[in-house]
Image 1: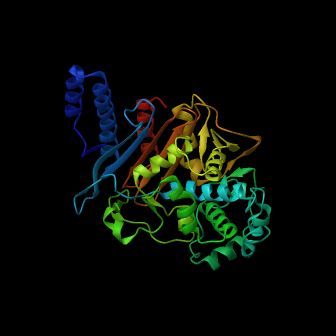
Image 2: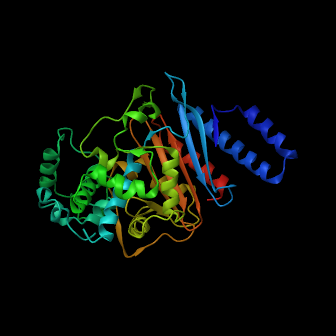
Image 3: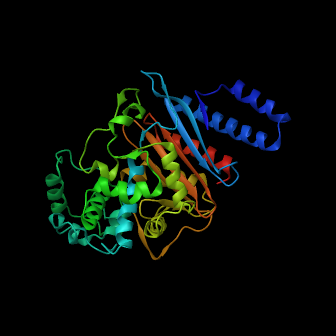
Length: 390
């Protein structure tokens, strides 16, 4: 692991020159560290992020196939450095865990992707939601569910009443509209079908079986000092505030190591119990195509060679903030070897990213404690992708 502020260009150049006389394995490690440090330095200068954590997985990384790199400070006011124990807000990366819990419920026969949500949560049944399937919720292809709940929605009773009255602007399955309410409802359905509290089920059925022991919907008192201070784009300190269905849609906090372990599990580099392994395998299977991206259950992917322009288009504001035409894939399409699978996540004070190359054992994660444009995160991801050959 590397733990540093960020080096100057001169320091990086000097380090590269100094590696010439080292053994080959040492030179490779030094080159990796220097290239990651240079990319991190540039990202932090562009975004003014106080802290940054990067995780890489590749068969070519000695000795374990994974590396973590830490830069800057988790809390400028206290001078606390970013380190392996630092907790970041994951934002919409949390949806991966929600989708995994729903897929696990499918594997266990507690629900079916073809079910309408009201089959399991009767209080949301209405003329709009009864036209939806759980798969359409998981793939954001509801026909136009909004990105956020209306401002007057606070408690579950408010949300349930809103679902009962909501009617899709377009036929479900024909329009992709990225939405927190859709994934929030999927989490409620999964928890109801499995007969428990969502956060407890997510912890006991997904997080802990994957070895994600530093991932929390509620940060325990013993870990609060490790919780990074987030910052808005204009530099104001901020942390995640409670919201309707926040745990299900965007409420997870985790370390970079845990997020990287989730990517490793998705790559098949971990051995969770068989039902969970099958659930994870189902998530990136392409169900809809919208623009440049193929949409699975939360995971999105781009066929090889997956040029940067296509990935940038699939993560552009227009794909996140508004409705876009979608086409159902029949049969569903697993990502081919070399497909670039990714997911972004952000809160008002944090920005994160996770991606992997299907079938190639290559992946990366990025977590920063300042909100910043997605394009800046992608720029760093493309540099890291080139470093590991993804």
